[in-house]
Amino acid sequence: MKYLKTYKLFESQNLDSLANQFLDEYSHQYDLRLGKPFDKEKANCSWFTKEFYNWAKSKSIDVKIVYFDSDVEAHIVPMIDGQTIDFSVKQFTKNPDDDYLILASDDYSKWGYSEYEILDEFPDWATVMSASKSKWSEIDNKLQREFEFDDFQQALQFINEIAVICESENHHPEINWVYNKIILKLSTHDAGDVITEKDIKLAELIDEVA
Image (cartoon, rainbow, N blue to C red; front, side, top):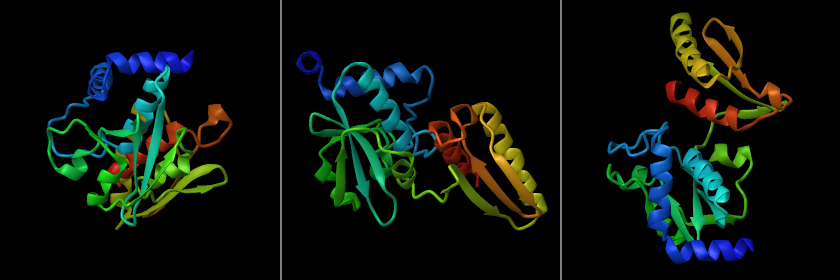
């Protein structure tokens, strides 16, 4: 029955309409149609892929994940019916009007991605974090990163900046701070002090101000 429902969906809706439906439904909460140069905080490939993956699954759409590896920066996108829907493609095209592009996996070779893997499910956090070549490490079931600044004042400014982010996300790190060195540790207490999507998202937001 699930496959019959998926087949009927594609009779009436193509990938363009699916992409626009997703953008329309999420635009009331997030400013997705930026019309501006690529903004990694609001057009992050892992964020878009996870949100679209969950959205598509909620509608019984058969969606897969394509993970592209690279020496510079990995990339992750959703795939439906053998084609990717890339909502963060403007980082490659440099065209502010590209809200998304529908591409074949082999099309990414022109941007240096010759190797890729197709996954049936959304990958674990380590794969997701590697899509941005994260500087965070997993230590004792926590995401951890060390920051070093020029002086105490610069470290204080960083703490004040991430405090605003943490409050807005209602998620807070463990902080070890000695003069100009800060170590942050992220885990989700409500989930049993393990790494969850909340930690991955907060780590990405902190990286934006680091």
